[in-house]
Length: 171
Image (cartoon, rainbow, N blue to C red; front, side, top):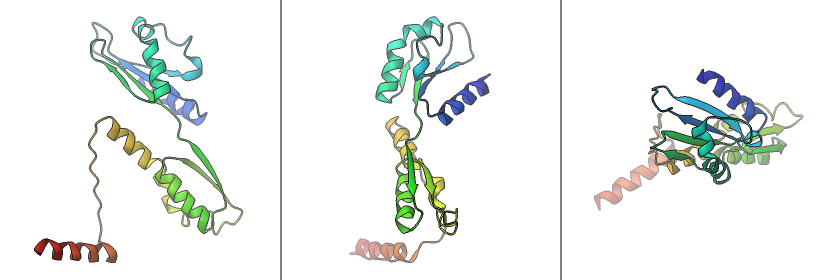
C-alpha cells in the first residue's frame, strides 16, 4: 500500500514535480494513511476531510519548504522538491571542480563531454555525493542530530595537524 505512494513520489521526482507527502492516522484506526499530492494537482486530489481542513498548511509547506505537524489531528505534511539540476559542459579540471562543489551543494548533476577519458566515473568519483550536504542541512533544520563516522588512515596533513594540537594541549 505505501510502496505505491513512494513509487508515485519517485515518478514525480523523475518528472521534476514537487509535492507533499501527507501521513496521518485516521480517528479510531491504528494504521498510517499516506497520500502524495503534486503541486499542480492540489485542487482535485484528495477528498479526506482531515486533509481538506489542512489545505492552507499544505500550501504553506510547499511554498516555505518546511514540514508541518499537528499532534491533535495526528497529521504530518512533508514537502518534497526535486533537487535543482545543473548541467556542466566539459569534464576537464574546471568541470570536475564544479561537479564536486555542485554535488556538495545538493544539485542533481549532468556532465557532458565528448572525451570519454574525462567524462567517466574515475574522473568524477564524487558524483555519488549529489545532495549529501543539502539533505544533511534539511535534517538538522528538523532538529535531528547527525553523527559522522570516518573510517580509515589519517592523511599526512591531518596527522601533522593532530600532532600540533597535542603539543598545544600540553602547553
